[in-house]
Amino acid sequence: MIRYTIERIVDSDEKVLIEGWAIDKLPVDIILYNGKQKLECSITRIPRGDVLASVHVQTSDNEVGFRIEADGVSSKNLRIVFQTQENRVVYKLNSRWNGLHIRLFAKLIPYLKRNG
Image 1: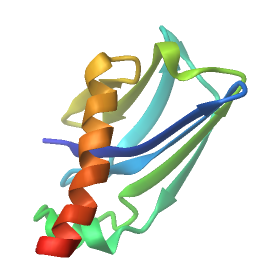
Image 2: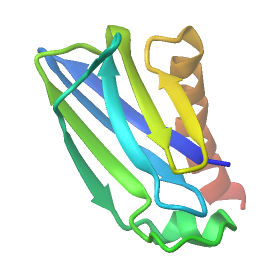
Image 3: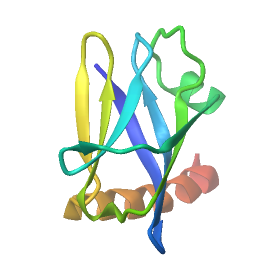
Image 4: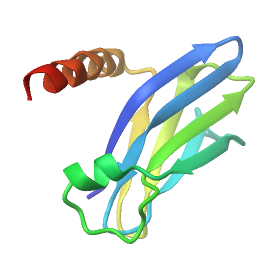
């Protein structure tokens, strides 16, 4: 089962930046779509020791973090597809629940740091 979190979405002036992490027992491929069209974009994989320590999944991939940058689009119709040889998950950026999820996550981290 692919586990993921979108930690940050910045949508400004025809450019979108998306940061987060995705983990599974197999390496996770990340693909960005605008509607049904696959987008050319920059996807940088980032080592995330904090995720590996807190999410107890045996994986051979230590670069579970990602940073996606796409020019010439807005986040309105974007979808991120996380997939392995065995699993596939689709995250729709335009869902009204996504903003709530990110706002709650942004408030949760400082709370956990203060209160443990």
